[in-house]
Image (cartoon, rainbow, N blue to C red; front, top):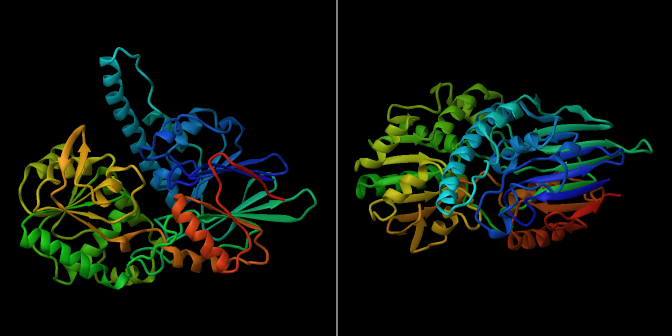
Length: 468
C-alpha cells in the first residue's frame, strides 16, 4: 500500500493525497485548488501528478475550495468514479463549485485580454460552470459514523470534524491480501471545541497511518469567552466613534455564518449599535440557506438559542446582498456600517473592492478573522504592510488592521493535540503532517513526538511512501 502527497505538502492549500491499495485501488483524499501567489505553484492547478482516469474514488473531507476546488478539472480530465462526502458537503459543493467555475471563467477573460494586448493566443479556463455541473452528477452523500463500501475491499467512515458544516475526518478500512485490515486516517481540517453553531470535533477510529493537518502548529488561539465582547468593542470603535466602515473578509461558508450568528446574539441582547450590517457575497447568502437545512450539524447551544430566536442568521439590521448594483452602492456610501464579504484571504471577490475603496481611510477597520496563506493579499495586510498593490495600483494602508485568531475554524496546537488523543499510540505507525507551512509543521512535529507518538513525517510535494 502507498500514499502519495499531491497537494497541501508543506503548504496550507491544494489538499490532495492519493492512497493506492495492494489491490491496485486508487483512492484520492480531497482535490483542492491551490490559492496563493507562490511562483513555485504556478502550474499546480493545471497539472496532475497522477492520471485522473486511473483514480477509482474521490473521498472528500469538506467543501472548502482548497480541498474541493479542482474537482471539476479532475472530472474534465478523465475521472469517472464516485465523489463520496457527507450530505451537507454535497449540498455546499453544489454552490461552491459552480461559483468557482464562474470565477475561473471571469478570471480567464481578464487574463486573455492581457494576453491579447501582448499578441499572445487565448488560453482556456481551468474549468467552467458547465464542468462543475457535470462533476456534481458524480457526488454521493452519506452520513456520519457508519462504514460504507466505496471500492474493492475498501470502506470509509466519516466523523464530524467540527470545522465547517458537513466537514469530516476520514477513516479508510482496507482489507489486506492476507485478510487483515489496515486503517488509514485523514483528519481533514480539525475544528475547534466550544465554537458557535457546530458540534465539537468527534473522535475517529484508531489508525495504522494518519494524515494530520498542521495549520496552526506552535500557535495558541484566543479563547471563546471574549469573542463577542471583542467584536462589539471593534464595532463601536469603528462604526460609532470613528464613523467608519468595519470590513470583515470571511469565507462564504462557515466563517460568515459564525460572525452573523454572533452579531445576531448581540442584536438579540440589545447591545448592537444602530448600524447596518451587510453580507455582501452571493455565495454566502446561498450557503446560509443550506445551513438552515442542516440542523443535524448544530451543537446544543444554538439549538437552545433557536427556541427563542428561530432564525439565528437574520435580524432587523442585517442585509443580504446579491446584486452587483447593491454592492457598488455600499462602496459609494460613506455611512458607517459592517461589511462581511468574501474571500477570506482577500485575493478575489467583492471584499477586494471594499478593501480597495477603504484601505486608505483611517476611519475604517479591516478585521482579519481567519488564516491567510503566504503571498495572499490577506497575509500581506495582516503582516503589517504599509503599502499594498490592489488591482495593479499601490495603496497606503491607513485603515486599522485588527486580527482575531479566535474566529479560526482550525484547531490550534493544543486543540489538535487534544484531538489526536483518540489515536492508539502503540498502533499508529506513522503520522504524516499536511496542510501546514514548514515552520509550523516543524514545531508541531516536536510537540507530537513529545506527546508520545513514535514517528512523524513531513512529506514534500509529490513524495510517495510505502505503508507496510
